[in-house]
Image (cartoon, rainbow, N blue to C red; front, side, top):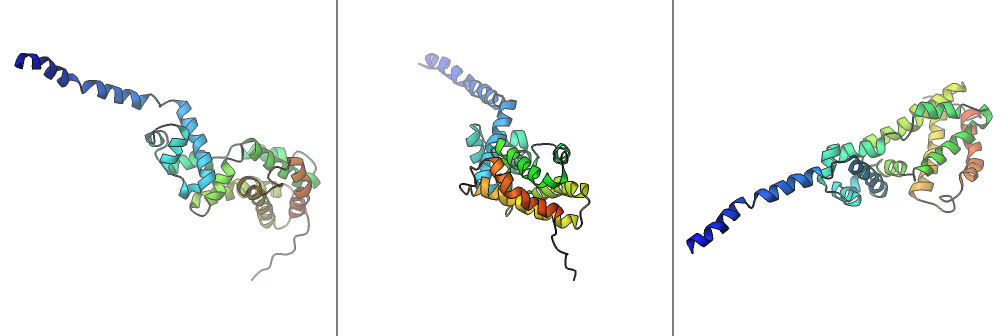
Amino acid sequence: MSTSEQPGTAANATAPAEPRAQTRKRGRRPAGQDTREALLTAAREVFSELGYEGATVRGIASRAGVDAAMVNHWFGGKEALFASAVLQLPFDPGEVVAELLQGPPDSLGERIVHRFVTVWDTTAGGAFPALVRSLASHDQAAISLKNFLIKHILSRVVASIDADQPQLRAALCASQLIGIGMARYVAEFEPFASADPETLVTAIGPTLQRYLTGDIGSARSN
């Protein structure tokens, strides 16, 4: 009896080696660029739906179809994933400014509305609603949105037309664009949300044009 048990004992002694090899293999298998892109896509969706505070690493990983450990593997955690998925601009602001300034100044407002709507439409509004939904719970989201609209784009556009009160004009334009984004991509007010870009350009462009070149009154001083 004892001799017949020895082979079983020897087999049991070597059994743990196989699971360890499998564990190492599973750890390497998802570490491809497609996993990183899947996490970025899932993160934009989840942050858009729930904001920074409501989103969880586990929920994002589940949406991407990978283990939650892959978030730390690729990004180091939720904060860094948010920065990579949401806070990075989907285009070069310098190129956008150059495009906006190609044309007569009296139609600049229409070009801004058209560029804003078409850019966010083609990206399904992914980063914008994620940014807006996270404003209350993530300080960097507010800073990023401000830099994106005012510092990198609108202030440079206003400076090019040499208007008075440039900071106020840039902020007024930003308020209008954020309102468009909220109604179209976050709250999804209909028929505004499904209106074609040209309809919005015709309706809202003149408002931005007044903010840019029209009379906006004098700023009060204390």
